[in-house]
Length: 333
Ligand code: KG4
Ligand code: ZN
Image 1 (cartoon, protein in one colour):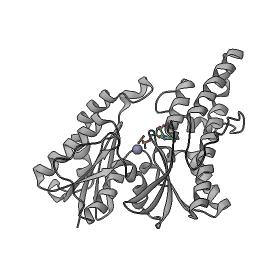
Image 2: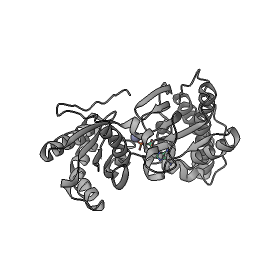
Image 3: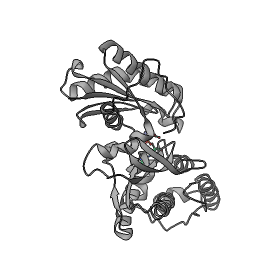
């Protein structure tokens, strides 16, 4: 039996999970509301909130899993990438917990964990597969050959897809995080109402900064002509922006699928919670004969369950970390 306690603290979610032999027993997530009024995550406030949350969140995860602290065989934690001050809280907690209980420490890469969230529940993808990992800080197409044999074959040159949602929300006067709100308004709107340009980026890379600028100018010009433009057209604007972001993502996935001859396609990360993207992936499955893998909603945005499953596979490989390990704001695969 392998019982893993996992800690995630890379950004603005403090989360702890318990997984026993690869089966998730609890996944507690404390979302930090403190950032909403600032239009983005404030790093110093995030670190402080993690410090307040971490012990109660771990206690709740242990209680919800109906286990005893003494049953835990290893503690897995997010080493990076992320906000350094936030990562430090989770890393220090994990190191202290491992030391105090004389158990193994397992470091996990947050972006790999987003991909490995597909191994929490069935159906699980078979190797090799392609995974579009789209979050607030990253946009990557990952060629997944094995659990820890992954290669980034395409990524963004500037903003991440989640950032494109969040920055658009800011332009539209909506609070952070903007993705879920744009998703909500988009459901009632016409995605073809306002055509935004698709950037022509070579290969499998992405760019979202040009789109952001064109949205900024579009909104500015429309508001000049009609101060009520946003009030009367919020649904259509959100649907049109979301449609463009999603089509940029899916068109690159089509290119990657053809280039690598792989039709097993997964999506992961916060933006994979987007209902428009999820629906268009299902359509793509029919149109292009793909086997599509979409994570359960709770495993899309940041959560410790994905750290637990990644930690479990590392634990089985006896891939342990030592007490002198430090978190990394930037981290490669
Ligand atoms: O993976 P995640 O929770 O944190 C990072 O590692 O960055 O991703 C957060 C990002 C934010 O940019 C948020 O706006 C976006 O995911 N997001 C969404 C949706 N839910 C979260 N974007 C579009 N539609 C959603 N439903
Ligand atoms: Zn994430």
